[in-house]
Image 1 (cartoon, rainbow, N blue to C red):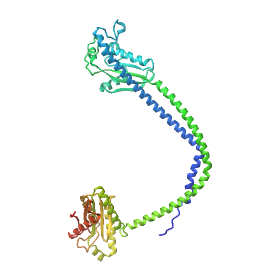
Image 2 (cartoon, rainbow, N blue to C red):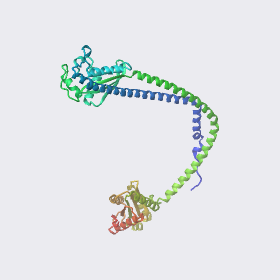
Image 3 (cartoon, rainbow, N blue to C red):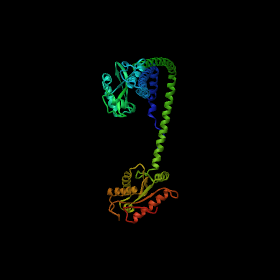
Amino acid sequence: MSTKAPINESAKQPGLTGTKLFNFDLVIKHSTFCLSALFSLTAITIFFYLNSLASIQVRETAIKNAEVYLQTLAEFRALYTSEVVLNAKKHGIEITHDYKNKEGAIPLPATLSMMLGNRIGGSTNGVSSRLYSPYPFPWREDDNGLNDSFSRQAWQALTADPKRSFYRFEEYQGKISLRYARADIMQPSCVGCHNAHEDTPKNDWKIGDVRGVLEIITPIDTDIGSADTMIKHTLALLIAILVLALVGIRWVMGKLNLRSIEAKQLTEQGIEINNQLVSEVNYRKEAQQQLLEMSLTDGLTGVANRRKFDQELASEWRRAKRDGTQLSLIMLDVDEFKAYNDNYGHQSGDDVLCSLAAAMSGSAQRATDNFCRYGGEEFVLLIANSSSEEAQLMAEKLRVCVEQLALPHNYSNTSNLVTVSLGLATFKPADGHSGIDLLKAADVALYAAKDQGRNRFTIYQGH
């Protein structure tokens, strides 16, 4: 074997080293364009991200405010009913929607609640409220029925599940608005009045019924406009910062360009030397790997040899002991092989061993199966993490595999074909045993198979 390392062809091609330097020069030369494109992309990404974030924030804030409005109105309505309306009834005071036209009358809870909601929101941010149902009182039929798609869908959703809320962002009276609705539940203090009122459209109300939908309408155009203004100011500031950064980086790039020529020469020399060293190291590694594989491979059959088997047995025994799994070993011997060599010749005997090794190693397909030539006409198969039943199936598979090769053996007392005898042992590693004990047990089982007539497998029974 020659010890001279081959010349690495990549080291002879300056293009492989010069390409990186050439690309670096292009980056330096066109740094302004590259950085401008990068900063522009960054600014656009940030703009769209902030715009999306602001939109989400505006919508979430509108939803939270609507929930507060609804909760406030509900609490006020309940308080007004319990503390004012009930006491007013006791003193004979009339509670009516038409309270302005009747002396001494006070408004209904629903009427006063809507007035309060519109008064709170209308003077500052345009928030308004609605209370509607499919069963409006006669004086509220014009504006409190299910008069659009949202109100109809809200009624349908909230009657199906009164505990949920129903909302949607849509254009309402020319403005992008949040329409947020909750179910208005019939309370114990209200059911009697609703059922007994002379103008009631429904007189079979029960406590807990959904009697209507309370809706808060919140315009968000102003909030979106404020967010857009903030984003534009932020974007302008960001662009200014990026421009300043671009100027600074361009100055640094110019300095780097002055050093690039010297660095290029040093880099080319370093890469060339490195390529030579890498080539030498790779060559030596390949040679060592080849020697290692040769030392662990049987020269005749091409399968693993006895040395490889000893290593695998020790390694798998430790693994099985650590993991608490079973380890099986099949030892097999070619029946009447001496008679085969004596009558057909040693070359024919070697051919038989090669054929058997190829067929049986192909049958052992699991990654944890280790098939090796143990010596002479003996082979072993080490099976990790397997039960005795699984190993028995494999032993029979190997026996049948050899028999199906149909290699003639007219000088055998067992069959007119080449056959094998197999011994099987399965151990669960424990203190007091070793891999050698497993090997001896498989050997004992192998000789038992021979004593019982060959062309069969037997199982070690002593463990």
